[in-house]
Image (cartoon, rainbow, N blue to C red; front, side, top):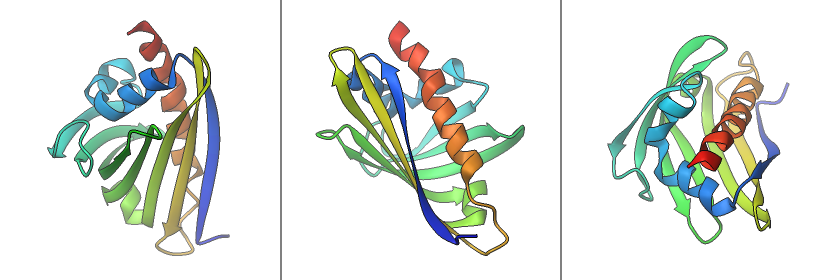
Length: 151
């Protein structure tokens, strides 16, 4: 089993890349109401909701268990890309490196793709690969899409 790796997936979405990017960059406070089955709370620990270098704390459910994740965010508006670096929380007890890159890529006038890249490095060989975390992220993107279109 690998001790480090990269997962990549693409999620096709209806709606513009700009709308989806704005929701994921600036409007995380809407997530508990929109997808409360995944995300129970998001708070800003440092910075603003949409600030480069901002730190957020997420309370979420993975495989029926409540978990916490503290992240630092890097923003690239030109490429509609966010890089989330894991700082603390349940996932960081398992992984030395846990980085998520989300990019919203326009496809047509009213559709886009969310490209999700997960870069990870396990703390030891007994830790399973983070496939359940990738499944959660993909599900969050799909479930948030309906709320983006209604906005």
